[in-house]
Picture 1: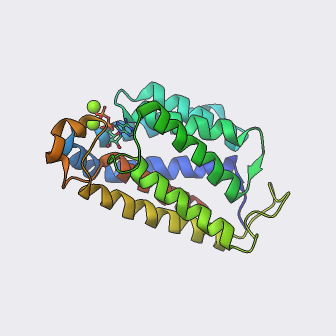
Picture 2: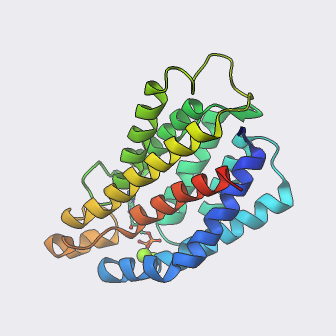
Picture 3: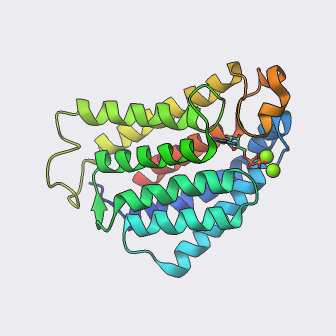
Length: 227
Ligand code: ADP
Ligand code: MG
Ligand code: MG
């Protein structure tokens, strides 16, 4: 059994901070090839600050936790990724509202609102070789799982009930795999937003660093489901 509550998402933030520390050099190398080589350091600093803020403020609901995380990311990261991931998380939090716990479809819908806010803020569309090229396929995978699970994941009024850990972990793992496929797919794309776009056609052949950070965020959701 698993409840998607503040405790779960707190474990997610800690797992994410650890994964960014583990993979900082790889993310930085990806960004160095097409950008300015600071993405790993940016995400380590940002999620380190988020982990601290969550420990100090102990948000009581998923919505509060995501709002705090988004604001902290925006304020602690100088690069483009701070406001972009920060906006995604803050908008997700706003959409989650004041519920003590959320269903997986509710969470997926909130993430979708966050992704739309990123598109509005940065002007990127699918195929521009940005973090959206990992995030949107991951959300599509979540939606596909949610609607094919015979209602198990979106039973009316099930918010706050413990959900099957297997179903949730499977859906999140599928989302992570879709994010990875999307991130790898950015190698074939010409970057049209962010610093990598300065390379023009020479950006083709380089996978987007921010898209790989999205993969880590979904990996952390899986890890947090199985503490
Ligand atoms: P900076 O480019 O300022 O150094 P980072 O290196 O931390 O910031 O983050 C770069 C990542 O941000 C890119 O790999 C890409 O995924 C994402 N990104 C940059 N610009 C945009 C945009 N306009 N829309 C969506 N994502 C973007
Ligand atoms: Mg950079
Ligand atoms: Mg930079």
